[in-house]
Length: 253
View 1: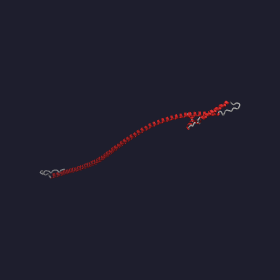
View 2: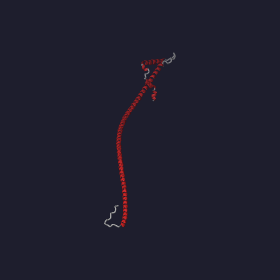
View 3: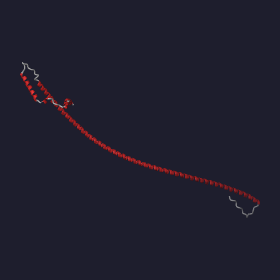
View 4: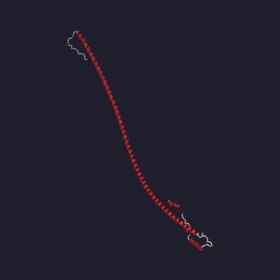
């Protein structure tokens, strides 16, 4: 608070008593003004202190806020860098997965084409093998038919040959039996005069003796004139004899 202005010097000086009273009041006023000024100064100092404290708080808050912003910015930057790195890693993994997928797809396509080619080759081989087997089967069937026909023909020829052999053997047996019968008959006729009993001197008939002698001469001449081979047994082969022996078996079969 500013001091009081000085009084005008043209006024008349007061009296001493009044002057003393005035001086005491003036002193009181001056003391009161000094107290007010001290209070004002104290209050001003307190306000300045509070203002400084507020300014300090604000500055501290600003510094903290700035530090926080810097920290947040740094964290955001680090997070951004980390996210960018993670994104790059994911993109690289995705590209690698795409490359692997393309490689796997290409390998699967190659294997599929190779398998199709192998199956086609195997199918052709099987078709060729089936055609070859069919040709072999047809050839075997023709050969079997030819063999069957040949066997039937051989069986027919065998049956015909057997029939001819049987007929020939039967004919030979008949001829042989006829020859044996003729030989036996001739032997019987040749021996018959010897078996005739001699007639005694009283009952012998001369015409019987003459007949027997004539028959003996006749048979003797015929036997002498007949060739030897007609009288001998015919020479039969072994197979014909076997056929003759088993004639009954052939006839039954």
